[in-house]
Each structure stands twice: as C-alpha cells, then as structure tokens.
Amino acid sequence: MPEPRTFRDHPVSFVRRSGRMSEGQERAWAELSPTYFFDVPRAVASTSVHPDARFVPADEFGRDGRFVVEIGSGQGHAIIHAASTHPDTDFLAVEVFRAGLARTMLDADAAGVRNLRLVEANAPEVLEVLLPEGAADEVWIFFSDPWHKKKHTKRRMIRPGFGATAGRALRDGGLLRLATDWEDYARQMRDVLDAAPEFERAFDGDWAERFDGRIMTAFERKGIEKGRDIRDLVYRRVARG
Image (cartoon, rainbow, N blue to C red):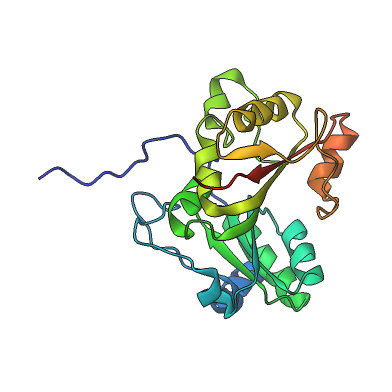
C-alpha cells in the first residue's frame, strides 16, 4: 500500500513562522477557544482541512442569518468591528497564525461579540471543502501577502483558478471583496477575476470605491504612509447554471 501523503499538491500563500504567544494570549486560547474557535479536522498538514470536515453556519450560530467570511483576518481588527456593528450577521475569521487568533478572541470577548467564529486553516481549503457550497453572502480578502518577488508570485492566493474556489463558497449574487496596496498584485487580481466565469464586476471604471465596511487598520495606514495606493475590487457571483 502507498504511504499517505504528508504534503500539499499546491503551494500555500503563507509561511508559518514559529513564535511564542504571550501569557495573555495563551490564557485567551485556553479560556475563550470553546466560545470562538472551530477545531478543524486535518488532512495532510497542520493547517489542512479533512475532506469530511464541515462548518455549517446555522449549526454554529444557531440561526440562519447573513454569513461573511474574512480570509487572513490578522489580529481581527476589521472583523471584530464588522461583527460588533452588524449583530444580525454572522462572521468567520480564517487565519493561520495562532497569536493573531488569540488576539482576536481577546478583543472580541472584550467587545461582547458573539456572532464570530475563528478557524486556523489554509484559506482555499476552507472555501473548497470546509464550507457548504453557496454558504457565504460575502468573502473578504484584504491585504493578502503580495509575494512581490518574481520567484514567489506562485504563492499568491489570487491566481488562475481562484475564481472557482471562491465561487463555490459564495451564494448566487454573493460578493467577493478584495483590497491590496500592491499595484502589480491588484492588476493580477483583476485579470484573474475578470477571466473567471463564476464572477462579474460589481464596480465601474478601473477600480472599485473603497469598501466603507472596512475600517482603517495599522496595516493599511502603513501602506499609505509608504506612498502606496490602496486598490479595492468587488465581484458578484453569477447565477449557477
């Protein structure tokens, strides 16, 4: 019998670096993960998703409401703000760095947010496997790693084929919102999604207006301070055939 694989078929858009969580983050993980954290069954790697794993929003939140997924939630500033200001909507934060997830749980608890869950997993596998097809009303991808060196661009999340990945998770008419401060990556995103049969533009002109539901984070402010333009895109999931 062949040995089971221990590696992925495609490069991921992140590199997990070792790092210790602070005592406060360790405590948050222990105390708050039963409330916020969805423990993903694994497949071939520590951030993979087992083919049988499912996150069913109605089961997790106890209601059928609007459902928004943020890919690469970092320390959670954007999604906590969104969840606290839209209590009628349920949110899922997808991140691979435990310190960021712990920080998100701490701040969500302090804000009294309960319409939020967190998963530690490779984002494309969340969209392809973990979520039921058509589960999400919106998917947000703000400032994903641009992997700006030419030899590393194959690691970019938004590359040919991503339209099918994101399109599977979105309901018909659902929105895919993106933002980046890296012009070359913004153009790649636009080219990839313009060519994706699952999507159509939901903006006029070259770029979308800034999404007013995205708060200004330190990350975005840093890009502006360095003189980089912030570019938004928004695409609508076309009706399935």
